[in-house]
Amino acid sequence: MKRLTIGAIALLMTASFCMAQSKNNKTPVSRQEAVKPTLPAFEMMNHIYHFNKASNSAAPLEKAAATMKTKMKLMGYGGANVMYVIDGTKANVRLLQTDTALFVINTGGAPAEYTLYKLETTKKERQAITQKASGMGFGNNAANGGLTIPYNTIQLKSGLYQLTPATKLEKGEYFFATKPSLSASNIDVFAFAID
Image 1: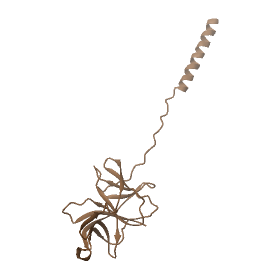
Image 2: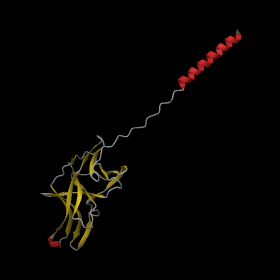
Image 3: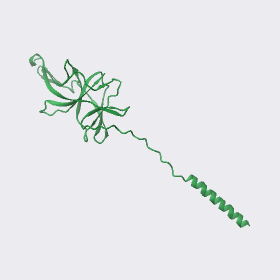
């Protein structure tokens, strides 16, 4: 009888231990990593978009063909300005000064080379001065003359790049200009404005 009682107690203890182990032996639930929001579709290749990070939306900038012109002062003795000119006094894409100026381009490969210009507006057109010449020859180009705005480039994923101006943009008209070829008199630009 003692053996039976000891056997029953041992059996109960073993069963109890096994049940406790099965309750504690649950497969641990893996922690889910933070899900990164998917970026909107940037379908047009080599086209610059304004990217609103808060709403995760994008709007293409106005694409235009800029013409290179030279404007002489006093028949060249007063110097000259070389500039890119686009028709119209206002860009179609308008951003508020409170908006974050983030831009994205889908190159499909390596980052593209663009220059960001602040534009001067006349009665009929917008113009970006690329070089200023003194009466005796070229004095300074746009980069040295403070006529361009530096920006930072961050790779978001393969072929997709974020362009962020290095300083807060003031109110006015702007465009990103592609790097011109030596023989080109027209270049593609992507215009926007800050209100």
